[in-house]
Image (cartoon, rainbow, N blue to C red; front, side, top):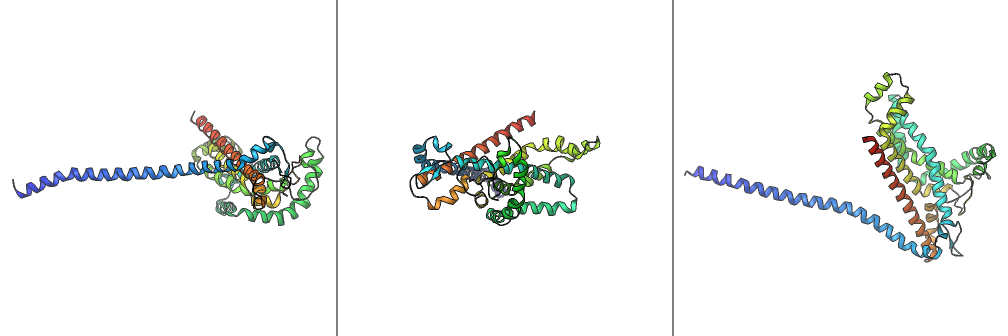
Length: 332
C-alpha cells in the first residue's frame, strides 16, 4: 500500500471521530442553553411567588387581628390602630372602571382612524404623538392634573355641569352629587384614562394593521361602509389582540400611584358620589408607608399591597382565560 493510500485511509477514519466530537460539543452547548433559559423562566416564577409570600407574611398580623372586617370597613385611624381596606379597594376599582369606560372607546377610535381613515401624511405624526404619551412619567400627569386639569377644567366647568345635569336625574343623581371641589374619584379616573390611552391605541393599531387587505377590499367591494368593515371584519379578526391590549391598560390603571395620589383627594372614606374625594390602594401606601410604625399599621399597609397583588393577578388570569376562549372560538 502506498503512502498516499495509507494517509487517505487515516484521514477518512478520523472524519467520524471529528464529527462525533462536534456533535458532542453541540449537545453540551444545547443542554447549557436549555438550562439557562429554564433558569431564567424559573427565576420569574420564584420572584412572583416570593413577592406574594412576603406580602402575605407581612399582612398576616392585620388579617388575624381584624379578620373579615378589614375588607368591609372603611375606617382608617392610625392613632386608634383601626384599619380597613374597603375605601381603598373601592377607590381603586372605581377609578379603574372610569378610566376604562373612557379610555378604551377613545383609544379604539383613534386606532381605527389611524388605520382606516387618516390621511397618509398625518398617520405617522399622530402615531408618534400617541406613543410619546406612553413615555411620560406618571408624576408629570399628576402635576398636570393638580395644577391645570383640576383648577382650570374640572372645578370651574366639568363638575358644575355634571352636578347641574346628571346630578338632577332621579336614581343616579347620588353618583354626581356634592360640591365641585375639583379633586375626586372622577378626576383621578379621567387622568388615568389619558394615561392608558397610548396602550390601547398602540396595541389596537398594530393588530388592526394585521388584517389582510383582501378581506377589507372584498367588504368595500360589496358596498359595506367603513363602520361595517370595522365592526364585521376588523374587530372580529383582531379581537384577541384588542382584548390583550385592554387588559394591559387595566393593569396599568389598577396599579397607578403618583398621578392618582395628586388628584384623588386622599380621603379614606366611601362615598356614593364619584365627585367626592377618595383614595386608592397604591395612593394610600405611597402616602403613609414612610410614616408607618412597626406593628398593625405597617401590617395593614402590607395587607393593602397583598390585596392589590391579588386583584391584579385575578384580572390578568381572567384576561388569559378570555383570550384562550377567543382563540378556541376563532379556530372553530
